[in-house]
Amino acid sequence: MTFEEQLAESTKYCEEVLNRYLPAEDEASLPGHYAKTVIDAANYSVLGGGKHLRPLFMAQVNAMYGGRKQLAEPLMAALEMIHNYSLIHDDLPCMDNDRYRRGRLTTHAVYGEGMAVLAGDGLLNWAYETALKAFDVADRDEERERVVAALKVLAGNAGVLGMVGGQCADVEAEDHPDTVDRAKLFYIHKHKTACMIESGFQIGGILAGAPADDLTRLGQIGEDIGVAFQIQDDILDVTSTLEELGKPIGSDEREGKVTYVTLFGLEHSKEDVVSLTEEALSLFDSLSAKNDFLRELIGQLTTRRK
Ligand code: GRG
Image 1 (cartoon, rainbow, N blue to C red):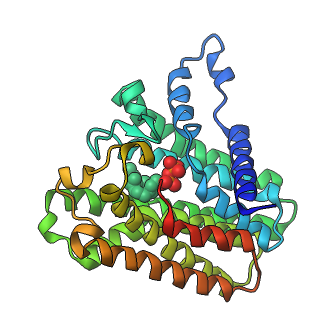
Image 2 (image 1 turned 135 degrees about the horizontal axis):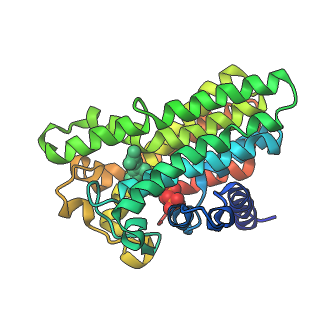
């Protein structure tokens, strides 16, 4: 199979897993239920053409250590739900105020602000309800312990000392751009963006019982890729087009945001994406298991255009 075929197959698998765990629209449509709109709004986001990179990373890492697919699936779906909740809230008028993402209207632009807040809240809760289903799949104590460890990583990386903390620093930085230096910007990128990517790598390893040394390296790989991913996002905001990116470009500059590009310049930013990716690849090569497809995918993120 070519790399492209494997990517298409792996993405389709993630979509199929997500579909299986989405909030049931049918049930919410029954007489006496009034939650249909919030479920529609949540599913509009989750099935809205995302790349599903985080569950894909999780599935690939889990597979490379010989983990059971079924055990990872609830966690894959949960991670993608948390990712989508964060995007819905990030796009709200009180945050980034974006009307377009993935080439179409954002959730609040279609369903209204209140319903978008609820869709995000609903997805965050549904994510944990879904992740807990891994206990129904675990068939021995060792697996149950791995699920507990995976849940701790999932919740920690999404929480106040993880993604939410990064968003806190980002929101404050918008009001005080003069306070943003290298350390603060790195904190924002690492927490806001890299934490969720790290979750994919670490949880995949945890559920498969990867050695402790490898788990530490998987975390660092996720961090490197995540920070590189965000720097690339800053680069694309000045080098891409609306058609290619699926959302308006130049928004960082319009909002007076301090980004990697404004702080270090375009060329330096591109160099850092390359060096972070190289570090991730060299760490990947030092792992006790191999996955050629995942290695190539990590390499390609340097040149991603959307
Ligand atoms: C609101 C608590 C809260 C957190 C928001 C997600 C987030 C934190 C900020 C995202 C800001 C952003 C757009 C960063 C750029 C990098 C990034 C995470 C892009 C979106 O990820 P993709 O490209 O998304 O994997 P798809 O559309 O493929 O699902």
